[in-house]
Image 1 (cartoon, rainbow, N blue to C red):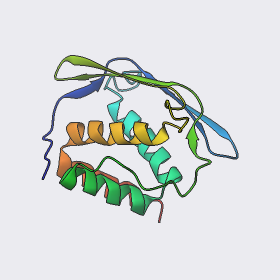
Image 2 (image 1 turned 90 degrees about the vertical axis):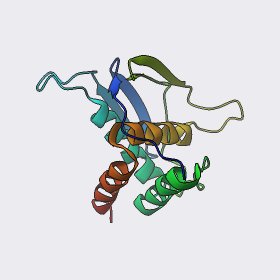
Image 3 (image 1 turned 135 degrees about the vertical axis):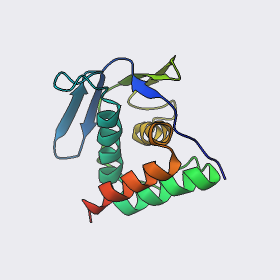
Image 4 (image 1 turned 180 degrees about the vertical axis):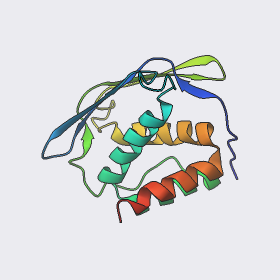
Amino acid sequence: MTTITKTPVALALGFKLQIDTGTSSLKSTCPAKSKKTGLNNIDSLIDSVMHLGIKRHSAKELLSFAKERILNNCNTLPPASNEKVKLSGKCVIIVKIDDKRVDLSLPVVDANGTNNADALIISIIDIGRMHYGDNEFIVWLEEKAKDYE
């Protein structure tokens, strides 16, 4: 069993996501720190990408995959049930993990021409696991999934 314990994770810079839902284009932009609270917006990043995952797959599939990733280090999401939900712009996210800068830069498609939405989802699942800890992340994702049942 792979276990990731809670690790200090924070956005180093804000993030910008562009998502095509098939019927509309959504842009999610967020600064590194909330102007209102002064707190880091890492939770907003995790929430936005898990929303993408739920819309692209389903709440049940995403939760099942996250659990499988934790238990068996699974690397492949099942085929998307809604291929129309995808990245529509380059995604750049810079986080600090244990005070080390980690740059996550994903073009819209990979070298094979496959949309990188799932690669982003997997990366943010791992960031969520580090931020919350494995068990807490699953509890958080279960609560989020209830909103989509």
